[in-house]
Length: 605
Ligand SMILES: Nc1ncnc2c1ncn2[C@@H]1O[C@H](COP(=O)(O)OP(=O)(O)O)[C@@H](O)[C@H]1O
Ligand SMILES: [Mg+2]
Image 1 (cartoon, rainbow, N blue to C red):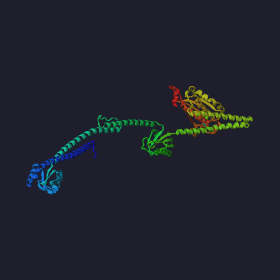
Image 2 (cartoon, rainbow, N blue to C red; image 1 turned 45 degrees about the vertical axis):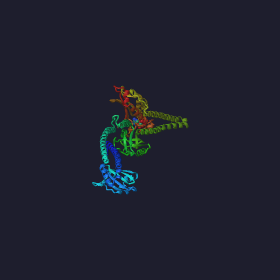
Image 3 (cartoon, protein in one colour; image 1 turned 60 degrees about the vertical axis):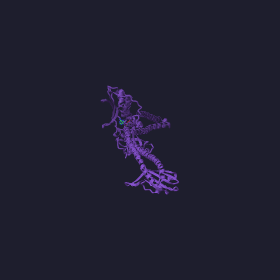
């Protein structure tokens, strides 16, 4: 059984009270016995001394009378032994008178300790317990306390011993009285202990239950303090718990703050973050990771392999879990094809953290760059080789032949021109792709711009007998960078004139749509076969590379066109009608009367 505070206090007090009571009882009983025994013995001794002169001088018959008289008067048992003067031991004496009811013979009396002591020293006494006259009373063994004294005399006429004995019934009475008093005191003490322990436990448990209640509230994360009176026994404990509670609250606040900060950082991160436990199960993930992997936010702790089926990533995660940071790059086929670079970092509490970065665009740009360098080198090699060959031929003596020398010089010149055009275009496209070419839109009248762009091709068109048609109203304006748009038109017109055979027709038309200006460059050339239509705007993409090079093309014209039009907030498209020829269509922002051109175009980009 579990004892409460009250029970324990009571049991302790009761044990103390019973212990002290029992000890006090034992001591008191011993003392009462000793004092009463001594006192009785002294009295018996005095009586013995008084009676001794009488019995030693009287005849035997009188001695019996004296003994009985004394026994009657004092309530003591009286025995008288007498014998010859030269008796050598008390056993040699005979009983002269005996008022005892015990019927002891001479030897028995002679063997009693007080008698033997008196024989040697003249007087002897004994205090102790012995069997009652009838040793069994009502079936219970009976013992009684008794005091006995013996006195010896010796003179020439004879020797004798007087023995007096009395029961110490007063002792038992006194002890019983002391017992009663102590028992009563004990009971009163127990009652007091019960009341005191109840009171103490009540006071204690009131504070304790307050402490318990507060502690529970603290565990639930509620604030507050335990208030106890300043002299309460549990003041110290309450103080400690208050301190603990304040510390807990502070730690909790700090933890909450850190957690919120972490959650905000994770939610705002562009990189995906996935935390894994020791079994490589997902324990947490941020929105970027969930979007990248196309998984629900709160799944029931799936294994990593259920989210991403990449052996490389699994190996990296395992290594990080074992404490070694690692990296893996893999393809995600779903929900979109993506290239992902994952950093796997060990976590101090076990498991690991994956940081997923979408490197699809980076890798694509890297591939484009490599591709570009390879293509550009290839393009540059052709005119350089041609120039070198011409110069070598001239050096080896062709210069001395006027006709051949002229031909080689012209070839070198043509290729040098092509080389310079190629370098110009390469510079242009590189600047555009790097975003380093500034495009500044401004309100621009289109008619003069078209006329200016036609200038360089007019001669070639005439040489091929092409009809040039321009259909642009004088007042049409667009929100464009004039230099950029002129470059766009020059490129489109150059292609149209270049690829349209003899006797064909090239047309430039400018028309106003609702919010845009539409510029079309049409020709009656061969058109562009469907598989190439989407790709002619890519760098170095040509329908017929041999013919393009022969005509001095760089393969970069349309790519530059597309970049410039995009930069001005417009779009360019290609249409090849069934009737033949090509239509390159450019749409650009028109000028709104309500707003300025510059902002409009910049916003449109
Ligand atoms: N008007 C056109 N008619 C037919 N084919 C064209 C026309 N414009 C462009 N092309 C095709 O598109 C390719 C890419 O054009 P472009 O980028 O200007 O390079 P190029 O230097 O070859 O002219 C050309 O090589 C040509 O095959
Ligand atoms: Mg071109």
